[in-house]
Amino acid sequence: MLLLALVSVSLGMSAQEKKHSVSTNSFWANWFVQGGVTWSAWYGVGEKSLVAPFRKFPTGKGHTGLGASLSLGKWFTPGIGLRTKVNAWQIGTKVDGVKADHYWSVGEQVMFNLSNMLMGYKEDRLWNVIPYAGAGIFRNTTAKKYLGGLSIGLLNTLRISPKVSAHIDLGLNSYEGSGGLSMKSRNRQFVAEVGITYRIGRHGWSKTPDVEAMNALSQSEIDALNAQLQDMTAENDRLQQELAAKPAAVAAPQPTHSTAAKAEAKVVAAPVSIFFDLGKAVVVTPRDRENVASLAKTAKENNLRVVVTGYADSKTGTAEGNKRLSQQRADAVADQLVKLGVSRDKIETRAAGGVNTLDTVENNRRVVVELK
Image (tube, rainbow, N blue to C red; front, side):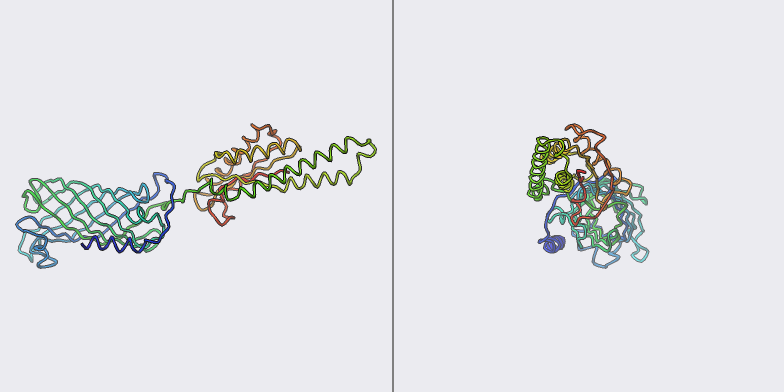
């Protein structure tokens, strides 16, 4: 009932949080270590209930003892992780008049972060509720016996800083076979632990950008710019035809060329942005390919230079990695332009690296194409 109450309170605190999908990070991200002090209570050996070991808390007439734990784990998704846990403890004291036995155990446990699974991932959530289940081996070093065991429990973490959390772990272990506290057939161990969790290296999860949604939101702007480009191109063609039809002496006046130059200047002032997914440098959406084709057509018809500038977001990755990624994105768009007939010597690529110039992090992962 206590465990259910803890789960209910934690989930209720996060019930209004908005869900969103996240990207899978590299294998070396989201590792953690845990260390804690444990108190163990045994029952099932000469006792009929869990109440017996608590009668003389904390000694429990030789059925309880203090110990320590150390864990190493990794979150593979915001909701699922694994940890390897080592425990060492002592049961019995001279005060109890019972011989002290020493134990250790090693177990592998699968963890389920219910807070992230039910309410969606939130990096700065104060309290996370994490049930777990696993199996391992148990060693009585005093009696020199081994047993196999199963474990279930509930881990509660309380955020202190981006890398450090306090935790309370309430677990139940079941050991079967010829061994255990008095080396009889079946033993149950209740374990309460208080400790610290430290997140190693890179941690957290990046929100998956909805490239289609971003493009849809800005499509009206893109359509308007493309329409403007088409109008300017048509006007430029008309002016060139008028010049060709006039006598050579009249075809050269500066005002007419100035008008055409103004039209070309308007073409230069119409950049187009192409957005990319996290860590990617591939032009994937049909809409982006259409925009690149439209720019290529305008550049060829007006003999214009094309400047392609790649960007990455500075929130993720290293400065060196972002510089390389921004160049790869610029090269990917340049390759598309070449395939569409734009001469390579008319294309200039630039790598701006990681930037944070736009309010939304995902919008910084882009390429901007300008006609000069």
